[in-house]
Length: 405
Ligand code: ADP
Ligand code: MG
Ligand code: MG
Ligand code: MG
Ligand code: MG
Image (tube, rainbow, N blue to C red; front, side, top):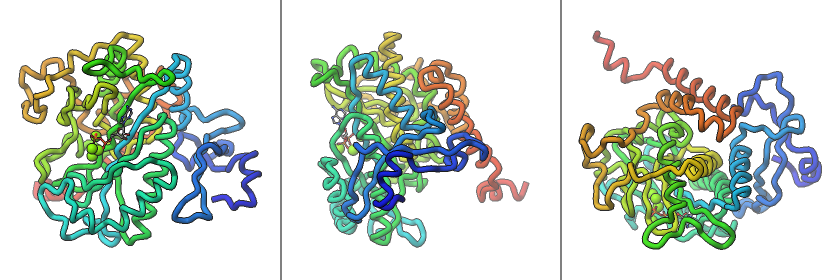
């Protein structure tokens, strides 16, 4: 937090942090990490107008911190620019509104087994939702829809897609604003991938299109263009290895491989497949101008998600990746195809847990080259620490299963 009297100084020198405290793989001996504000991102906060939020870039001793997620994204944006392209993206960051006291769903009347789009449950949280939407629109988000999602207590707010750096910065602001406003209204908001085992989890779908000037080069005639198909081919081929980034927590794998939900579907994928306007696959092509990756969850880093799309997409273009082998006709319900079915021959599965995902990421040399060795080393180290911490945790389940052994 910087008082207005210090803005000039911080703009010139940066805001100082101890890098070891930032999870970016530094020791306590490392020199100061300085965040240089990116003034183009400044947003006056509508609900606290004396406050402004600004995004920034991380530097140590004059050198950009290569493993910081905004730097990883900017490197991909530079690569896109070299190729003459801009990636435009839109995200759907689902969240639950919980009670601040006990982390259960805040609305005790929101109990239908299929609550999606329920207007009454939405009206009981209207004051908070309207506050969020007004905040976003005062910041030029271009919100066009808010709805009650598929789980009790779950909501989604949709705003207009932009160039992927703007969307990533907006995504950071969005999560902060939703959580802050929920607290002001006496609730708690969560983007946790699967907070309730009987309900759908929080996805974070990303819609992608690629632009050359005013032209969306993903736009095809009936479906997306040949270039978009190669880009998509790269994303599909690398999904099992980048899952540790799009689904970065232990809990993420309860969304991807979790129990059935009260509403009937999880709406999340467990295999690498795609089709047309069909929500049972990992990738959906809702129109002839974009594709939607439905894999990522609420824990994904807003910068790493579009960075992965470009890294894998351009790799797909360079290697002429062909997505045809994971494609299904639009009328196939992926959830009805059982494991072991011949229809799944050649269809890759997604990792079952965080350590499998982390090992898949670690062994993918292409991704290391595309995203940078510094990022890869730091990220994998963090994920392994997370898994070790989880493994050391003694759970109620273990006690129930094993006390009487
Ligand atoms: P759905 O629930 O059907 O997946 P939503 O309306 O919830 O769709 O979200 C769609 C997202 O995709 C929004 O952020 C929207 O702005 C974005 N979007 C729409 N067209 C494009 C496009 N051409 N390129 C990138 N994003 C797009
Ligand atoms: Mg949506
Ligand atoms: Mg949704
Ligand atoms: Mg929709
Ligand atoms: Mg979607």
